[in-house]
View 1 (cartoon, rainbow, N blue to C red):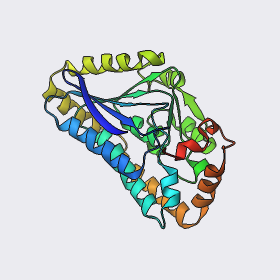
View 2: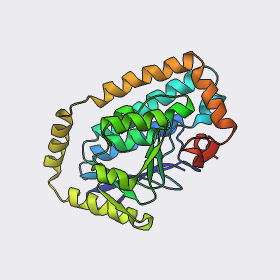
View 3: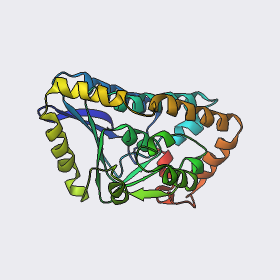
Length: 263
C-alpha cells in the first residue's frame, strides 16, 4: 500500500498509487505522490512518466474519514496542501506525464489527470467532480482542461460523470482501450515519447507550460479558498456527514461511503 515507482522500459518511469479499497488518499498519500512524481521527473534517465493506480479505480479523491475523525481544520488544511502539491508535481514534472486511468477518476483524480500531458483510459473509466455532494469545492480548474466550459459547469453543478469515450470525443483522452490492455497502451505512448531527445523534451515541457492560458496553480489555489469558507460556515460538515452515513443519491452513488475510507 502506498506509492511506488518502477522502470519497465528505458526512459520510462511508472508511478503507481495503491491505497485500498478505492484510492481515496490520506494527507500523507498526496505528499508521497507529489514526491514520487517530482523524483521521477528529476531523474536524468527518465524521459516520460506514467501515472497509474492499482485496485478498483484510479482515484476517489481525499480520504474523507481521515478528515472527519480529525479535530479542528488540520486534516482539511493538510488535504488542501497535499492536493495542491500533488497536482503541481504532475503539471511541473520536468518530463511529460501520461495518466493511465481505469475505473473511477473522481475529485482529486480530476486534478491529477487534468494536469497530465496525456491521458490513456480503459473503456470502464469514468470522470467527475462530486465535490458539491461532499461539501467541497475545487478542481474545476482541471476539469476545464478536459471539457468545454459550459459542459464543465454543468458537470460541476450536477456532480455527473462522463465516460472515457466521451472525453475521447472531446479530444482530451488520447486513447480508450479494454481494461486489460491499459498498461500496455499507456506504456506504448510513453515509449514513443521517451524515444525523443531527453533535453529537448524537458525544454518542450517548460515551453508548453509557459504558454498555458491559465495559471493552474493560482487558479486552483483560488478555488481552495472557497472550500475552506464552506468548512468554516459548517456547510461542508453537513454534507460530509451525510455522505459518510450512507450511499449518496447522486450519480457517484456507486462508490457509496467507501470513497471516503481506507481499510
